[in-house]
Image (tube, rainbow over all chains, first blue to last red; front, side, top):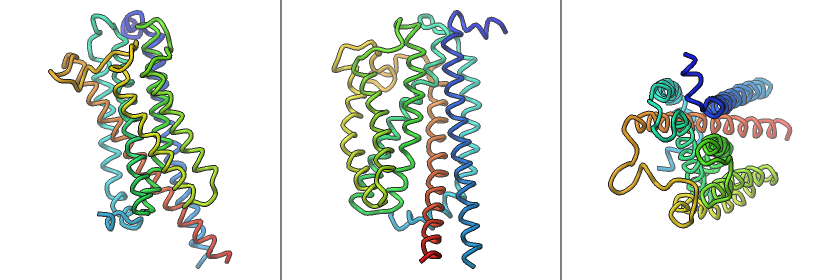
Length: 51
Length: 237
């Protein structure tokens, strides 16, 4: 396990690369889903008020 | 073909496809990450070869995103198709994200392999220009209030910027560069061993599906927002 975490002698480059990619992708998914959910809620509210 | 791409039909069709697309993306990412961390270390690059499994797919998808954005912009300009404008507009932030990820992961690979995080050579500079094109496109959309005019101006920028794609692709042949030349899609077959190609292709498929999954959700969001704005305007009129 320590050898795996050490990534040879390149842990300082491999883990940040995967970490930044993970954070970027998760943030993009979360922001996209939040915006979608908000748009649905807003439209539903406007349609309710219009009736 | 365009009759199948009106917003109503898009919402119906995409609503049915999205769960499958999301599930396929998640499965491919799980398999891709597993393959990435079980692949052996390269005899020259050591464990940094694993960065290639996220750097190369991010770069491919960034370029594909720009190509998609430019094609959608062209369709929007020529056919005045509203869904094409929505697709182009929503592809840009995703393209910018993948470009940033490709630049950062490439930089983290470059430091131990080249001895530097950054080099102003043809490939890296043209890829940085790709990021500025995405950001310029997004800024243009946000700067112009009228949606029709914004779509037209942004589409022209997207089409002008297409010239950067072949520059990125062939920069490693045209100029002396630190960046390695084509090693996968080349005459005579790939220079990379199959043990590294599998994780690379699975991750490339995962990144590609992620792009289209997020793009569809973003397009649905934009359509809902436009509908809400139109209803709110109608109610206030």
